[in-house]
Image (cartoon, rainbow, N blue to C red; front, side, top):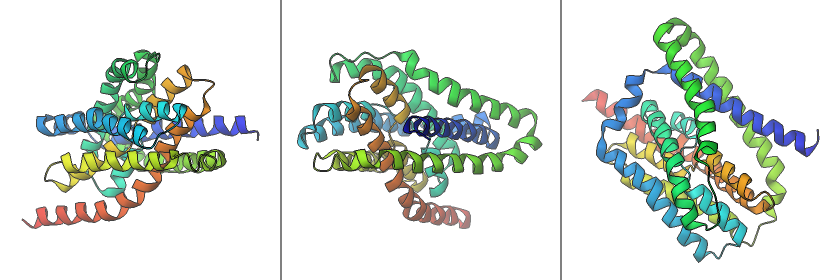
Length: 291
């Protein structure tokens, strides 16, 4: 296989992950369960502040502090302003967070990104043009449509939903694992070539800055803290890539910076979700049951 074919395969694996993941989630809960967490107005506002004020501000300051080169700075700002990465649902499963809140937060952040990015990016990156429809298309066709289908099956054919939910979840986990391995393999040399330019350090720091913002704004409930931390630490890779590829087709470090933030976020937060956050959520759930 040529590199072009492998890139195409990687993109296909990501698409298959998102579609099967949304179908599985839709079949596992009702619309009422998904909407309910957003009724906490204070927590919802904190989620918006963390994702669309604190993370972009932190990225702007980090880019200047680390003196990132021009292309890397563009990619860094692009992914900092995009929120709602589907992989956060897998991190939520690892951490035993509330799946309804994870999904509600994911959809809300994606929808807000469609409005937010066209307004903010021209201010932060003069000359960048953003089409809201281009950002909205992946949200509608890859996330909302499969989610709606899953919810419809759950509402009308509950036995079928119970039968399909777990297999779809396992298949989606395979697709995302394969996509990460393939993309990491294809981009490894390019990433290592940036050593000394602070791009790797910037990618790591942005993820952890987002995680910290979400964790400390997540309120007293461990499950909410974990959910908001993961959702804020993982930036919206698909929306950022749409803007980066369409505006900077001859600037490879723009896309590379976006992929680095996305990949390092996945690789560093998955172990944390599976250990520390998982133990806290299980312990809190056990305490609540005993009370």
